[in-house]
Length: 383
Image: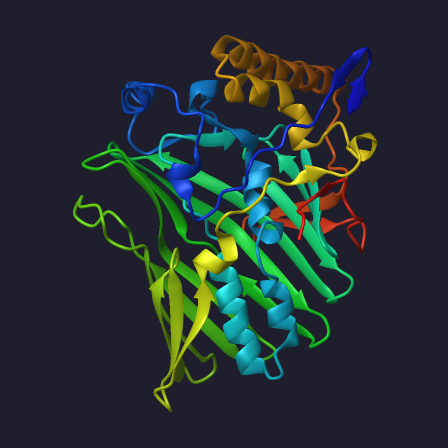
């Protein structure tokens, strides 16, 4: 429980996104499609949607920071440990490819998480893996993530900037920025990007990950290219969320493995030389039936924690008290506007608490953690 003046607020946590997707949602409002289409009546094609404020009817009861980081710690098996424990660079690279695929979750059409406020944080742990996320910019929205695992000697550094745009019958979100995974025991750094998030309204509503993804490790000289296909091919449901790609030597472009499967089912690699197949990822085993994280100690939760900032909004959504949710969300947003006005009147610049931030036209946003290690969190995912 966090006390702000005389106000006591309790963290509200909800189930992480898992393989169940839309069947796992219990807070759908009525007439959802009509409400969604009504939002875009006055939006021009190609418009930047990062400043668009959604009413709570269209929100899942959690922040984008939670959605961004949950795939790291809300899993049924430790795929990062598998990456670290492989004996040779090729096997480790294949394991990293599988781990990268495991970060994707089936999302629910018609719902979006809360846009994080400036300085909002999410701090959670799974075993020895500790994860910290901070919203370091609001316009444009930029999120920094740092995760460390002392037992595995693994570190993650992410800095991402989603860029959603409206194109008549769809919204496409390009996820700019890079993700770094460091296997420190092996002196290897893996740099990866993200596919696009596609939200289609017509002819069949749906949400999918589509487009290209890349993974590269300079130390091992290996790279991967992944291509994600839509489930809604020519508007017909029932297809699989396909993934195809290859792993190759970076210097010669010589292919070593072919990747094929469905990222919400199973993915295999084929050794081009031997013809041998191996299942490297099973979504059902990894992300099905995920439990809700718990609060280990309410007293240790920061006031900036997502589950605290949006607690009253989430309570309203979960109880389907839309008036309460709308009032609470307006209060959060108006408080941020007030703080912005105060900073501007004093000529102050907001500074992130957990990261140092830089920006250049050539490389974009860069975020470095202030502390070498992320401490254990009061919010935990139970093994």
